Image (cartoon, rainbow, N blue to C red; front, side, top):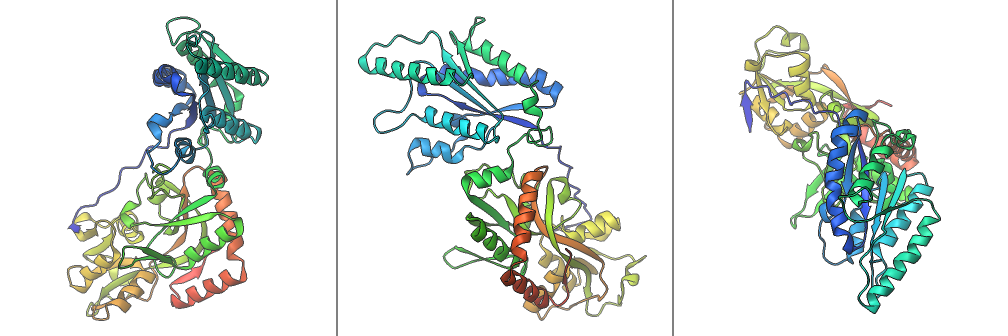
Length: 455
């Protein structure tokens, strides 16, 4: 679809919130305690949270984990749990586990302890009920004994908190946790470089390395990156940047998955999908760096520069870029793409002179010119060459002069310098390998001068 005479300037997204993420860990008998935590967090965020510019955010399996068949329950939780800044454990009268199953709470506690020692997590809290229900069976008595033994171990680490009752007194769980979290927001441990106001979420690099799994979005931009659906709806991926990502994975021992990305998915929430979502991605391969995209993402590995060119009808009187200036022309551009940014933002073409193709489809913009419904299209030269090869009957031609050159590289989440540096280092290392360097030279040759090395 396309519309005539309407510029749709997307609303600039708000800056991302600064979160301190809290992982809540407990056996099943602590449901009342877990339930009051939402109110505790809401109260703190409305006061200290607003004053400090930080917002607490809970991660609880009952709210954040997507059900999945075929795995043990604890494995389902572990697979979807991100690295968090604070671990908050709770125990009353049950230790958890049973039969051949180990205690999930104990496992989560030991994982968090490893993260603290590795300095990938800032703080641990653990609360024990000082007035647990009295056991009424031998099995319940054994459970409580395991709780006491575990409590002795935790006390030696100096991170124990105690409570009596869920709420309603000075010693209540609600009151104790609220007091401690308010105090914790003021601690310097939560204002280190890793947990600064611009980077309070765990680095994406930490998530990738902990899962040993890198998920790359792939654009349809051959020969730099491409995907094709087969007859049985499988997807094949190809292109220089795909080969580059595969080399990174082979060197680092990571599993790499590719996800086809359509141009209309380039919005402020492109990296916001939950970890368990099959379309969640860590980065996007082969993307033009435009000012609109810089509103919601960062760019790295700008290895190439790509021409933006003007396309006109075969019989058009327009011969050079100078002919475009001062003329009343109908401009066909793909919304959100480099040509759209040039025409709408740089040249400030009046809305009644533009035909904006929605869900950015550069091919449609070119077909508008071919059908004489528009006078000029502004697209990248790589895509224009490919369109002409695939549509030899199209009555269009490219002006030889370059309108602009755009940097092309890898798009990563905003304000995550640790992950950006990791991507830059690893992809740059792979790029220098003889095999990848040969692929790059061949790709540039195949593009007929439309792509040049930028860095």
